[in-house]
Image (tube, rainbow, N blue to C red; front, side, top):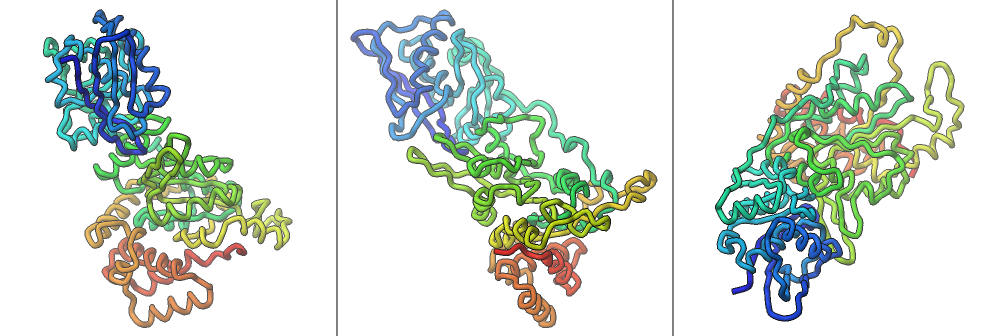
Length: 502
């Protein structure tokens, strides 16, 4: 029978739904017809497939060829279907064994010579293939990425001929295992390089332990960016599930997966000219934005007031929900966005408000307008706000001083995070209202203290809950089972910076 069926995977967000390629050869004038909602790149595969088959010394059928990509209502885009289409044509013309295709999935773009080129989104394909109990054949350049999935047999190939020899069992491909070990170097940065700034280091340690969002305010050159870039070096190691989720987002992006970054917490620092689409993702075929590329990592926004206010407002829902839904007329895609927001800003337009040398000449109205660029609802979603002052030159130039290393700070952070996971199964920053009432209880005098702070400083209900979460994290760092008054007052102090006008 001149019909064949091959399995492959499409790409919708970070998902990889199954696509069945059905190839039928029939009598009539020679032609190739591709149906099943193919995009332009898929329609062009007919020419790549024909040349690849001929240049691989196979016979291209001079018949009417109908290729159906099922399900028909699922959009298909990219060159990932070249390889399965070519195998379908060869199987339908009985040049390769059709029964051997029943338990294998194939993805890959073909060159005109028959060589295989890498595709985007190989990791989601591998995850879905493993769940379906199938083997997976990928281009050799995607092998490290697909091999991240445990329990999956990955067979990398460089040429169409190698895949056909594997199917016909004349020269089987060898299963691939991940090459190299994950690195935790984080580009060699370390907290010991930061002089003084003990208050800021303490705040970053608390933020790392509980996964809290943090805003640093200070004049230029005080080390705000330096501190933020060293935060990943004290974050807890990624779990297998977190690493796979983060790598899957990178896999479907234009950046592509890099084995050297496997299991490293991502650190994204977009420029303040970035658009809303660049942050949350988008496009006619939705791609992840910066907040999704920072999934299970850090999103650093330097010069926060310089971002367009409408751009900053798009962060409000993902900060709470941990996911972003990009909707377009043709399709809708969900991208994970469980990131830790670290932001930095100057205290005024010139940056030198409160400077001892008197360099600031900004009026109170200018300072008010500058800080008003950040809305109150967005500030409510930031757990901690700290001031980062100038470092005295005596400390800055004293090369004999020794600061604590990232490794020692990370030990305390990991111990505190382990207590949180054991208690509630998640970091404190992700506690629900019900869990806050359960794990963040206060004695009566501390309840009155928090109530007084809410009345005097105008905190919202969300702010009060975030104070309790931070206090719970401070207690976990000591460690203490109950939240003490000192933990609560320290948590309140991280929200006492003057808020911008609304």
